[in-house]
Amino acid sequence: MSNKLKTLSASQLEHLIADTVGEYLEEDCTCTISNLDTPYIDTEADIALDDKRDLTFEVRLTYTD
Image 1 (cartoon, helix red, strand yellow):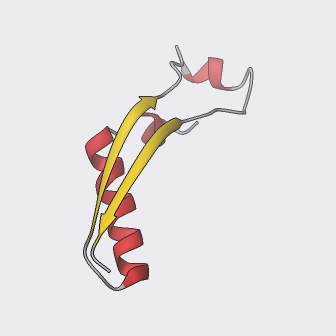
Image 2 (cartoon, helix red, strand yellow; image 1 turned 180 degrees about the vertical axis):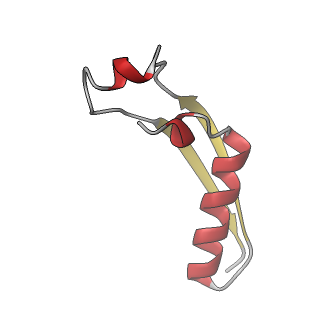
Image 3 (cartoon, rainbow, N blue to C red; image 1 turned 90 degrees about the horizontal axis):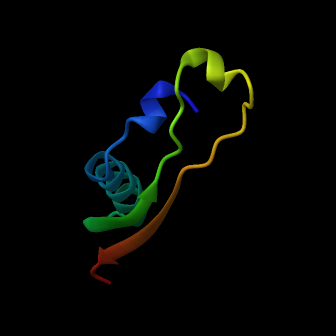
C-alpha cells in the first residue's frame, strides 16, 4: 500500500468519497466513514514482502433525492 494511501485519515477519505459521489450524482453528498482499518507497515522494505494490502472501512452516504 502506498504511503499516501495508508496515511489517509477518515476525514480525508470522507471528503474524497463525498466529492466523487456528489459529482456523479450532481448533488451535494455527505459521507461518514466508520471502522477504518489500515494495516501497519514497519518500513518500506516490509512492503516488498507482500504487495497485497487491504484498507477496510464502512461508508454511509447521505444525499437528497
